Length: 61
Image (cartoon, helix red, strand yellow):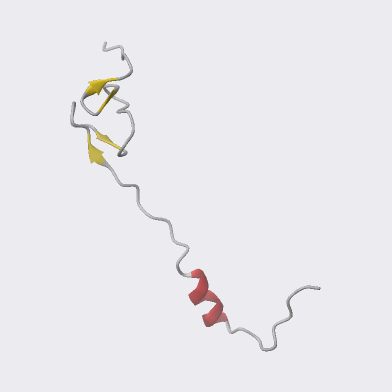
């Protein structure tokens, strides 16, 4: 059997419960090597470094 509520939940009470499902903005930090914005604890896409060490060799044109 499914749950059967005794009383009706109003729209405001229902929507208050759903109000905290908002998305958060992405946290960006500057790369310690090149200064480009990147997500923390990840390899930088522009220079390929992580923690001031080159992890991925990138081609520079």
